[in-house]
Length: 285
Image 1: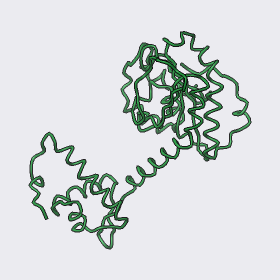
Image 2 (image 1 turned 120 degrees about the horizontal axis):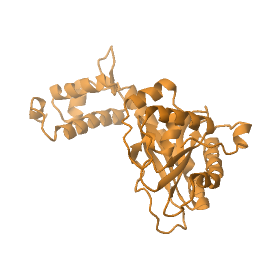
Image 3 (image 1 turned 135 degrees about the horizontal axis):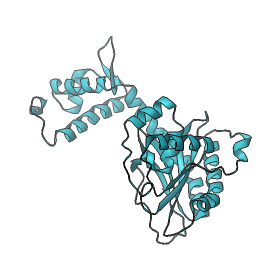
Image 4 (image 1 turned 90 degrees about the vertical axis):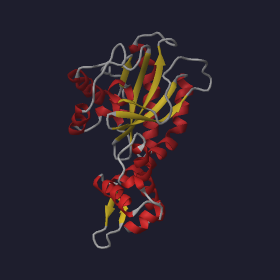
């Protein structure tokens, strides 16, 4: 087994990256073996000394990424690692199911369409579709996998609005409502009132709250249980359409709702009659 002087070495500027690599190596090894491993087996597999491996394993157990069997003392993946795996699978499946409807929406409206999920106080982009016939346009330069604060985005508002009250409070307690655009909501009371209107209407807007000139309109995607698992938005820049926000919503709400309902139905959700015939109700800005 190779020497491992890092076991007792002080932390250096590269130690965080090294710790991450070693932790992921341990998790990847257990995932690949598909069976619990003892400390000696695990240390040998990831090429660490027993003492160093034990230090990383102990931290991973404390964080819930590993569990130790009481009888054999061997280690296996814990609930946090499994939750991440299931979340990744769900996001991949969601993007696969939603791909065609999202592209159809982009082509129909001639604007960029995005889909995101909530991760703590951020949204994470899991799909992004541009219209086939669009020319050059000014828009937010984000890619799949990018993260943005939820409180100042239309998709984030949709996802926050459908969190349980305790979960929403916990997220907002950790969120700095910093000004990002000309009209960012920076007062918590105003934001919570806006989210209540979003929950009632099923539509959220972003009117230059994230960046100057950028507007968007978002609606929720539900799974078979009715839980909101994602949000879809249509992004519009003032440079391409300098209309009132009401005019933007009036034109784009119907195709957006139709698309999110289609994706939800593909996930097994059965909409209520009121959802199928819903008319525009002014969302909170």
